[in-house]
Image 1 (spheres, rainbow, N blue to C red):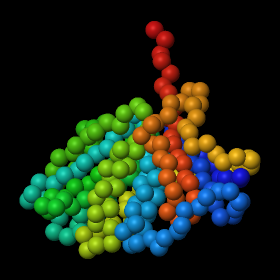
Image 2 (image 1 turned 180 degrees about the vertical axis):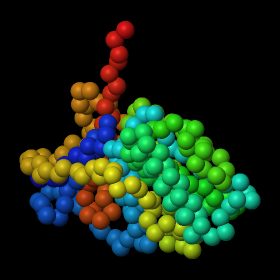
Image 3 (image 1 turned 90 degrees about the horizontal axis):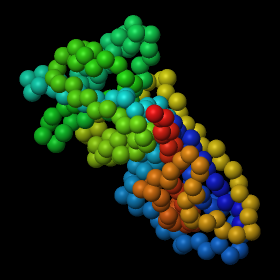
Length: 246
């Protein structure tokens, strides 16, 4: 019976989803009995969707050698309010943008603010590469921790890490940002290409090898979709690095 195949290209990754919808019903396909989704289950679904969006955003716009920064605060320099915390980030990004412009570059970023359980405040920034001395010079309130992105192009673990804090505070008084993250306007936002696959049999729930890519086995997910009650299957292909000839 017909099913939907969705492919989303984001940098070196290709995310593939296969699923049925109620638009193409056919006898013979067993559908699980739908149950009312609880608030907690809905929260998990929303979180998974947000993480997927962030993962694709990171994969499409950043690469090996770019940075995941953590800007922390000396205890005496911690902001007195959330608004001051936001203003520090705005000022830092404003000055950083000027430095990129001087070098003929354009700043790209994703920004998440965090307040720890013991009150420690810091900013997470994923940015394109620049001289680390500039990063340290512009941040006046504490240390700048620089983490290099690897060459894989698959930054799902970073997306998951950034989402953990936003999941905990989402919808509570601890929430700082109205959105889970802020980002520059110049980022690529990957959009999946969907097509209807017409076949006499159900789709096979197996990840297919593609030349030049490897299957990220950690991304293989086979389950019953919470909303439709139909089978759902997804996995990700990651582009292999070409070996340099010596």
